[in-house]
Image (cartoon, rainbow, N blue to C red; front, side, top):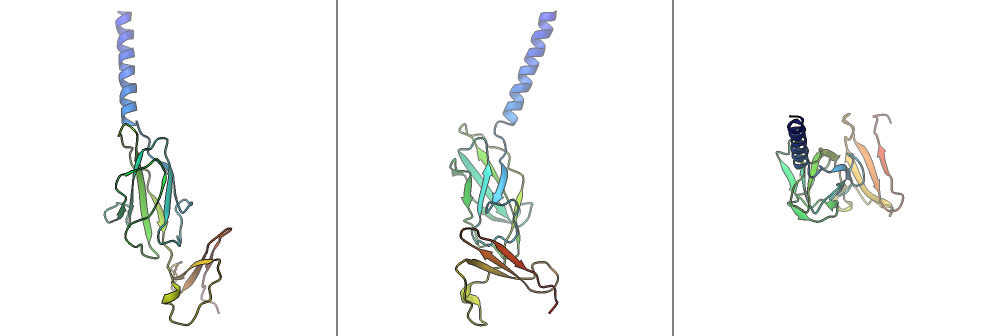
Length: 180
């Protein structure tokens, strides 16, 4: 009787371990970064870069949407066969002053897919291109990558964001507080 009980318990344990390993064979990606930042605001590149950590990956699929339910998709990378855990946005133009949501899933060499990662966000800056300024010439310092203008803090006035580029680049936010 003891042998049967011990055999039954071992069998039950083996079945549990097998089922658990099948359910979670490929862990979901973690450590999601956009332009090397976690959930950045004021992304100043029209083609942001995405990266993530995954314990195993031979392919991935990345989704970008303008709502957290992913109802209106801005970009679906499709299945990309690659062990590289990063990519650059290649979808429709992104709108300035808008928050976007993204997530990624990976697959293993055996073809099993992970669950999607937790959802991450990024917020696009407002862009001002040199050619679009009608008020006169702007002389850009070579370290200025982009300029964003708009009501970035939602207080009813115009604010400015300067995005740097190159080594040691910084982003500066000039908040208009309505004072002269």
